[in-house]
Image (cartoon, rainbow, N blue to C red; front, side, top):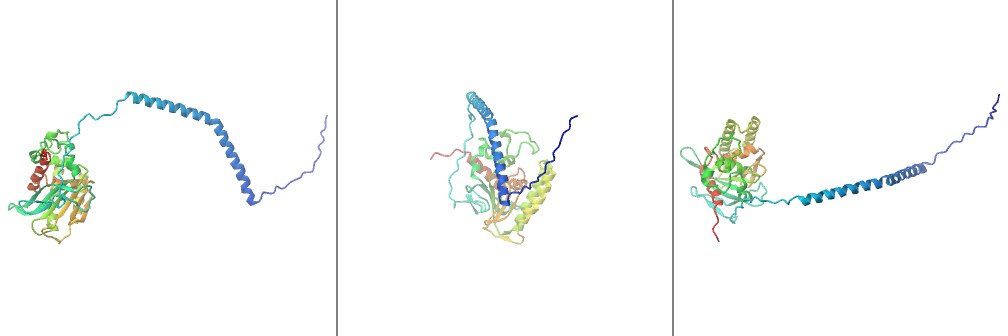
Length: 334
């Protein structure tokens, strides 16, 4: 039997003194930085070559594919002839147009202060608004359009080279609920103006009272026309119940723009503006009375002047139709 002899050695315990506070941070920071650098070096040595190779191969295949595509694809060409641009006559800003029925004048160019413009709006036509069977004259109205829309009329559905005054005045061939795509020669009357008002440009109707009136009288006339238009749209099913509810609220808001008990003397002007954002602005003598953010109400307010039945002003509708027709006539040689 073998016996092991264990010698008991004295145990020495040495207390490790931590480095001072100022040096402790440096100690750990140095070791950590060294480890990170070492890790980065290892990654670089291990993955640099494979990553570079993969990127190089991928780039080569991409270049070859693009070269092959460019070699076989034909360049894009526009083969269809674009409609010719309508040329507008240059006008003086001070030029005025006189209405033969009232002897009142409206400017040939309009620059409302409430909206930003690249060019002044152009007068297309003007006409008198009358009421009752006695044909009492109320105000003169002029329809203005953005020159950009006038130059590009031929790209609007229905506004092709066959446009005539008779086509603009004729009622629609089909009822409004007919949503089928129509040929240009089937679009006429109010529907032509509806397509025009769909353009994202400014339109305006300036009103000059024939005799002294007040905002209440003008406001009530506008609101009656709007209410009748919305009822007609509801009957034809061209607006939803949600649109009708919103329109009712919008008409109330529109009504609030007009101050009560304030007269509008002869010689002053009230302007309705359908903006490029399809809002409705009311401006009086250069001062903005309000802006309505309702595209349907804004459109119907303007269409009320060009309705197939009972337009607000028959004279204005006829004059505007003639004005648009004249734009399509060839200009005489200088």
